[in-house]
Image (tube, rainbow, N blue to C red; front, top):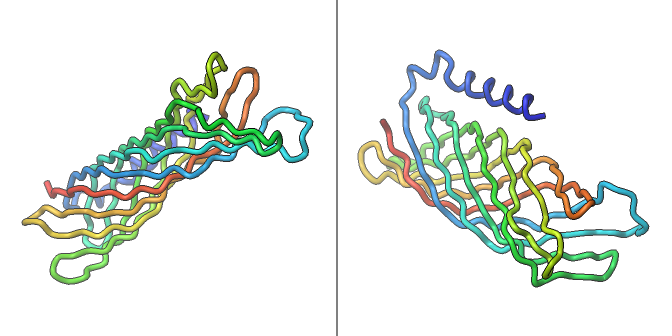
Length: 217
C-alpha cells in the first residue's frame, strides 16, 4: 500500500513539474485556520454478537496549517501542498450497548501531501474566486487516546489516500501578494484503528475556515 502511494505522489509531482510549468509564474502560500472534524463511524473488523453495534467518535475543533508551492498559468493553478491538522477526541458512543464515554482524552493529527488544482475566476479589481480540488496521501495518528483510567490506548498510525475540495477568495494586498480566504473540505479513505486486541475501520473528514497569503516569486 505504501509503495503504491509513493508511486502515486511521484507521478503527481512529475505531472506538476512537466514542461509547461517552466513558463508559469511561481508562488508560495501559507494558511492557518480552524477545523471541525466530523464524527467518525468505527466499523468492527471482527465477529461480534450485536446486530446493531455502532461505534462513533466525536471531536472538538482544532487547528489547520497549510503551506504550498505552486505554478500560476493565468486561468488555473497547480500546486503541491503540505498540510497539518489536529483535533481533540472528546467522546465515544456505543449505540449497540447504550454506552457513552464522554470523559475521553487524547488527540488525532493528520499530515497530508496533496497536489491541488485551482480555477481562478476574475471578479475584477484583482479579486479572484477560486474553486479547488486536490488528491494525495495523508498520515493519520492518534496519540494517547484513553477512554478511562487504566484502559488500553487507541493505536493509530496509518497512511491512506486523501482528497479535498473547496473555494477561496483572493484579495489583492500589494503587487504580487494576495490575501486568501478559503473554505476546505478534506477527507481520507478507510484506515485501521486498533483498540486492545480489536480492530476497527474508519475514515476522517473535516471542514476548515482558513486565512493566508499567496506571494509571487
